[in-house]
Image 1 (spheres, rainbow, N blue to C red):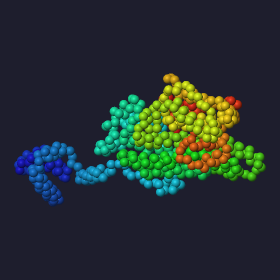
Image 2: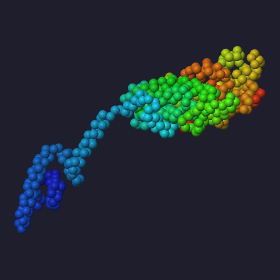
Image 3: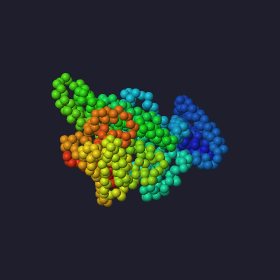
Length: 569
């Protein structure tokens, strides 16, 4: 019988694998090389039996190979050629082939059944805030570092200049991108032109997807840091209003984790995330007043002798009852308590409000990008902020508040660079200027008396092409501040307002950070919050006063906007 090359090769390998016998390199006779060879008969009967068994095995292999040869002859030539090429490799065992097939089929099934987006989030909202699961979740996120951003970074991201950094795994499919009229294909050139011309540009869906992805990662971390800080601040953590703020932050923290997947990869997920952040932004609008109420409750507790600070070392706030002492000793003790309490409490409040400003800037920027574009704006940032226009609006608001309270208001004169513009958040600058101007107007009216001829308040805007900062000075002749009170003006626990006004302010739960509806003096938060706003993007606020004459306030704002957030730990 004549063997084809395929048959011959198969015979060689199967024989070597099963019987491990040396094979001839080629058949020398017409007889098959796998037939039993003639051997000397000098061996025992056991050898005969063994030879007979081997011969039987050879015949079985012969038959199997003949069947295999018939099947190969019926196959297409390309398959036979492929078989010839693979004969040089050792044959794999049946077990290995089976495992590989299972793995391959498992992978195929996994690929076909895997969803296009990330796994759905776990619902934590039903868990009690004090449960170990929630505490562990907060601790896990608080251990992660926060990511600071600069004003320039926020603007460039809003313009789509960082889209090339988006991961391919969060880019929507081609069909999904095609369903949006303002996708990147149609808006890339527009974004570049708008960037060059400092005009407004509508954020593309991919920009919103990128910003939403960053916020989904960053916001839980920032909220977790503040939740832990609210739990650890001495004494203040015991105040009911502060505990409400902590519950508010915990609710928002769990809401983000429970309603949004960890990786936002579709436009539907982005829209759902935006709705969640809208609710959080509105819900946190009252935090400023709630924290002020907490400080008011702490002042009242200290004044009434209900609390003394324990170890003021930043651990869980523990307080104790004041011992029974004489009234004079009690008053001295209260003064000492207030002085000792100030440092750690104010350090906490500085951290808290800087972080709160950052959270509201990030959320506000994202939500503003989803709105119709406004000229010269990228989200909440105006690329052409005019200090002169901001100061004029703040003067109108402060004059309205002063006239409502006293029946009249001093004149304000603006000098300096009235035509300059620079990138900034106008609402931040307006808050700072409104606070300084209403303080100056109140001091001027109270120092000179009602119906007097008030000296004007002077505002100077200074800037130069080589200046590091834009500087705004507010000068008044309102009698100045005693030197002993200069440190206290930055205290969140110090205010010159009447107790009745304070009580009315903390009882009023307004859902905005600041408005003209508040009195000229109230919570005692105006100056320290204004300084936090100035410092958020790398600026500062300083005050110099001459008792018996007046006060000069200096606002420093960075021109380039490349300073990162001073994120507290």
